View 1 (cartoon, helix red, strand yellow):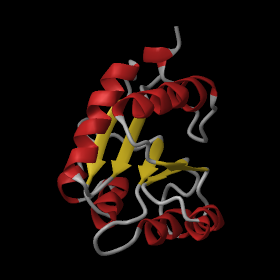
View 2 (cartoon, one colour):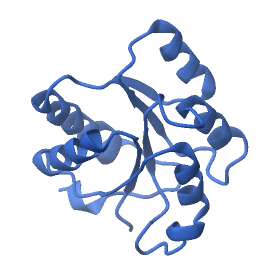
View 3 (spheres, helix red, strand yellow):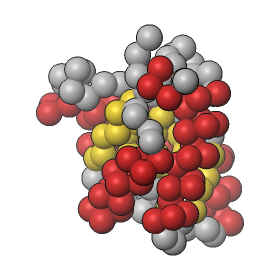
View 4 (tube, helix red, strand yellow):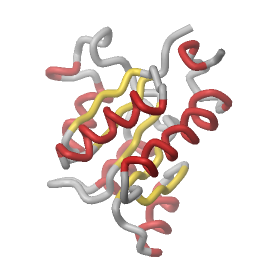
Length: 153
């Protein structure tokens, strides 16, 4: 059994640091890696360039994807992921500041598994991650068959 690896695609450094802090507060022991834009996410998923060492940068079992990214958008990355990547079935939670109906619809149309508007405070972020820990990391069966023994017990 392997520990799950979560890839966060987020361009705001403060949000990356908050997520790392909230992961610890929520007791999530999965591997969390962050990349700042869609092109880096593609390289990570493909195991290219600085992400070639899979022991340090394991294949993601779940993506937390921001929509508003520099260069290629989160929706464009999601379209690539579902239609051209070697991991078309990896679960994707769109995790963005937008709550606009058209963004929600576009994300689901592109193949998102869930759409979450970023919480406004750290307590709400920890609450979201505790729910993620229970549903997505403890009970959900992933296409790769991976489980996360660090939080099973």
